[in-house]
Length: 149
Image (cartoon, rainbow, N blue to C red):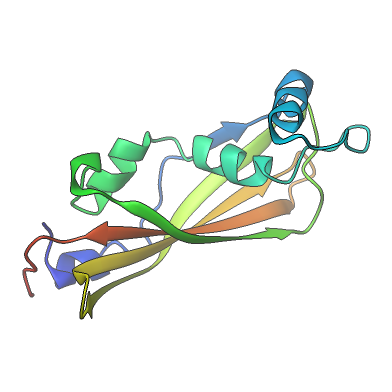
């Protein structure tokens, strides 16, 4: 458990980042599993925005959770996510992935008790040097007993 002060201190924290690439065969497999029609030539199914972003932050989910004083045993959840496509995600293209913590706040729900909401901004930058896709997942970290700052 981290204090509210420690939680607030995670804002601005950058994950190691890395690269992401959607291969043709992976796009075909995903479309087949979803029952989706074939896409436009060279373009990835939009679901890959989240998958490529999450896979390219440079840490496992367990390591991401640890940044916020949590583990998978605590029952973290994906509360919501948003995606902004400046450009379509293309197949067989290497994207640079960066990830920074945008917000982190502690809340208390009448039924849920204390929990933290953490939003990160993950950007996929294309070979042209521009951000093609921005993904913002918000993680929910249940806290068994809150420690105040």
